[in-house]
Amino acid sequence: MQPEPGQISDVSILQAIARRDETALAQLYDRYRVILFGLLLRILHNREEAEDVLQEVFLQVWRRAADFDENRGRPFTWLVTLTRSRAIDRLRSLAARDRVALAGAREPSEEVSDAVDDALKSEQKTVVTTALAQLPEEQQQPLLLAYYDGLTQSEIAKKLNAPLGTVKTRMRAGLKKLREQLGTKSVNFGF
Amino acid sequence: MSHEEYKQMIPAHAVSALDPAEDRMLASHLVRCSECRQELYEWQATAAVLVLGVDGAEPSPQVRERILSQVRTDNDNVSNTRVIPFPPPRRNVWSSFGSLGAIAAIVVVAALLVNAFVLWRENRAFRYEIAALQSEVRNSQLELEQKSKLLEMVEKPGTHFAELKGMQTAPGATAKLMYDSSGHAMIMAKGLPAAPADKEYQLWFIVPGKKPMPGKTFATDSHGSGMMEDQVPAEAMNSAVFAITLERKGGANSPEGSMYLSSGS
Image (cartoon, rainbow over the protein chains, first blue to last red):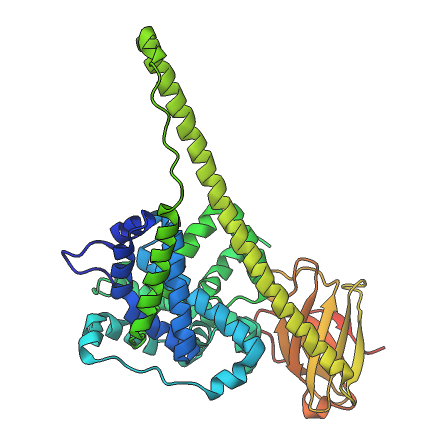
């Protein structure tokens, strides 16, 4: 995902945020709220928790924009990594407390209107879902359990009743294959 | 653990799937190894792309309001801070010395730049250290959870206990195994030698007259300690000998490697 031609680049927005420009933060929020909130809902399955974490993420961006280092990757990668990491932390702390209660209150992640979905670059979405679907089931399963359910490799091994070493090997192979597939597609991810 | 072994762990770290002990070890390696940090940034970019496969969703408008209101409060606090004016400039003594003054100024600026660079590097190192500490806290929480589970099992009526002793391959190693009436088992081993990169320790259930039944594999930390949960097969509930062998990664269907621990006499 990257800005449309003519839009201010994500790097420039982060630089403006580092100079405490409130409108720049609003701009970044408007650009990525839908996709990041979609990810949070997918991981947490609870609107209230997801909105709370989304707020935390953007306040962290506000306070840490100056730490962003372009040499480490694109702003989008930074934002997604930050969001996932916050979501997994929240998920694990909830698991210790009331995973059962949360599971009972699970809400399906609602899809947004077509217009908004279009803005999510459906071509990129198709490429990613196709690449995932092309992975063998035994590689896809541990990857999805880690990415969306926040399970560690041991937890995955237990859930799938598979040896830990096998889970590790399959997960590594799946990610490697995914990187190769996505890297050879003509769609520009901007990463 | 070798550099290559750490490198193998990076993809799982990029999707937050490492187990606490490994996560802790890798975090401290990342502080020292710039090559692995670079590798991590690349895997994080791959992991980030996966978000494009998720359906987008619209948060309520109040979230935007709350964020911007908090940010405005932050900015107001900054602008309300008392501003200390710079003192009026004094007469520039360097101008009397002409080019000598300019050279001295360049030296000072260069020293400041070097200082800024050193501070930037230190700041980066601190950030990694903080990340390592956060991961350590998370690991401690998980460790605590595991210990609570252990305690729960110890207190459960009908729990069976077995002690595994080190064989000639690891005379100092020991392990304790306990399992409840449903067969849910926990094993804690310590003093095991570090396993080679392509091998793991594996638990076996040995019932006289039958083929040894494979259990799960587990890794050990830098002190040779490891812990895992498994399920004791129904046939092994009453009269099994438990053993630990070193097998190829992922485990074997029948024991091929040397035996390190056994509950048999």
